Length: 113
Image (cartoon, rainbow, N blue to C red; front, side, top):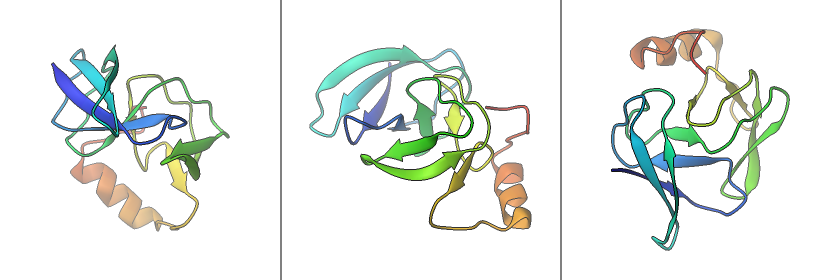
């Protein structure tokens, strides 16, 4: 069973604590290492990246650490990777060329998410 941690009860995402493949079962823990529930990954998510804990519609704010940290740029399904291909940071304006390089290195396509 894979593991992920949600840092705040309002968070819509959790950090995966190991590489996750599509279909993997994940136990979600809180910041006090208490098991909250299990879920299934909808796609591969590399260690240290974020998984959506619910469906998040385009145009909504992304909540992480209990505060808004980004704007959802395309619908995100529960269990999917949350990254630069579907979220725009509220604090850092990532230039398109760097965004594309991040996506290339992580093998993220526009169809992901």
